[in-house]
Image (tube, helix red, strand yellow):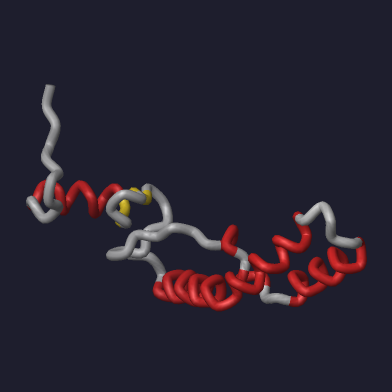
Amino acid sequence: MAKTSAIYREKKRQRLVATHAARRAELVKVIKNPEATLEEKDAAYKSIQKMPRDASSVRLHNRCSITGRPKGYSRRFGISRLVLRRLAHEGQLPGVRKSSW
């Protein structure tokens, strides 16, 4: 089990990203626009820099929804490899079965 502070920190980052996503997208659109003037781009850069750091989506890290483990994350199920194995053996994951060849 991961530290609860790390889990809550990640959830806080997810909320911040969600609240600032629309505004960040507008500003990035201005920055990437080749027809925008330098003053507009400069203002957009400054606006992005004034936003909280955790409002950027690159600061998010996938965590297991059950244990909060940051490593060994399976995107398809949203859980870590250890939980995936345990649930698969218990038959809790529909459509998943142990392979043998």
